[in-house]
Image (cartoon, rainbow, N blue to C red):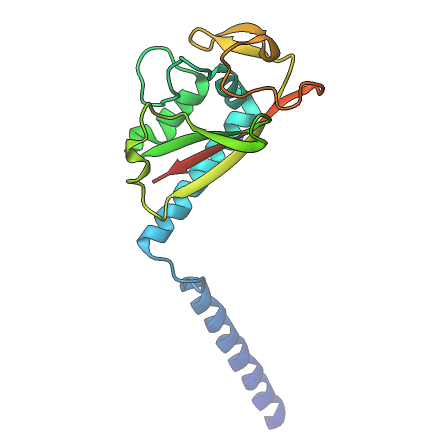
Length: 190
């Protein structure tokens, strides 16, 4: 009888120790240590990635890409007046929180046989050098086809097909193909 009592006592003690260990580990963060700056960068990266993904799913990113051309205003979420849906998304997600960002369009240029990158979030590149090394980066790809309409005016109206537009920022990368160009949209936030 005594042997059974000692066994039962040992089993209950083991259950208490295992429960205390599990409870203790759940109360303590066992993940890798991150500084405040690393946590902020991770949070900004998540918001930037989510913004680009949502804009791509709703078509707002395509419309903003099809709207940008030589001579049009830059894409800026903090502007007043008419703006694209994507610019409104940038405003709600970053500008209102005081975050800074740069937006780049990278496209294939068949004349130089290389990818070209255009800064489209502002008129000058003044704050490009000011951004910290730990800025968050998110990318999304937009495929443009020859028959897709360009966005004109305040980007709410549709214009002629991209293949017929003069002055569009990205050239037709492969004239014999249905694909006009593939644009990588890169959002850098700090």
